[in-house]
Image (cartoon, rainbow, N blue to C red; front, top):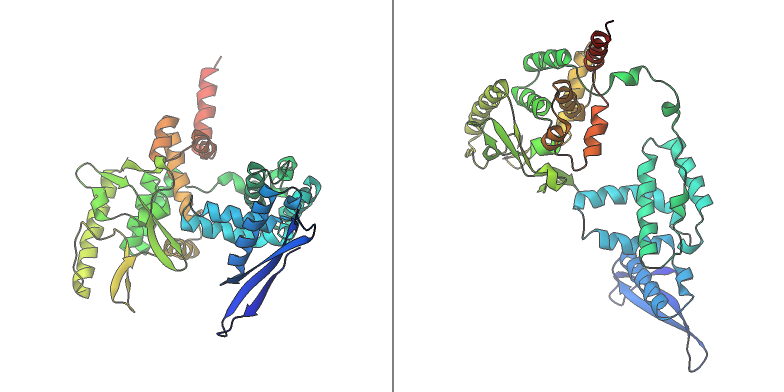
Length: 389
């Protein structure tokens, strides 16, 4: 088995190397090994070792058994970086910090479905999102299957454990992560009184359009059509390594035009006037075509930047700590609120899918299951009237 070692070069700098068995020399009959050195990082050496093992496997039988789960992961993640956004890669790599200690050291061909089941069961007792880890690990096994490194995928035979909360009725969970129409009206009324006008505008926009948080924070005034009362969703704000950046929308379906109502139009116009005055007081040039809708002033750099992604969460948390009599929902709960109200208003599910930017109709249908008590009351009244005999 090859081990990656750290060594010092002649100039004193640190580098990495490995020595790897590549088979029997057909002429001499002796074992052949190769040494590769000069890698700047351990990860770079791991990728090279995984690639070499794969090449040896293609040229001669038997060496496939040397490939570890980590070897295959390194090959897979290198390829995957070319296919998804940097923020997605960051999230995936974060999950593998928990996955690799369980699987990384094992030869991938020797991993059994029984072992996979044992790991999944352990994760199920520790993590609510344990299935996300199972999905990511499964992608590495699928990659190994695709290139003939294993004959069967042991993760395919795993049974997903039921969480304790799924086995019992939870009365609190019935309320759901959304507002009823009356609750939303009260929330917006108090938000206007108690929040900054910027935050009130943001939360109103999220509630009446169903935009994702990143989509709303990426908006520029050029994306707002005041005449037709529409917002053009064509980008999303993301952050990784402390750097904010605009990205393409989550899916092709996320690129859309969403209408909003007259009160929201007035709110946006009022906020733009307030924002313009803020720029003037700070001596920063203001161009409605170039300025983001939601901004913050960076004192250290003396410039306006996009609002931090964590800022809406913090504002909402602080608000609910003051208004404890209101149902507590998350920022994403405002999107669920909008979806529930579309359902309540009788909007066809395909139209709702387009408005919310869902790629899959099943996602929209899942959201529709979280309807408010008002919908249930209407359904009951309708069937009672129908069967009134």
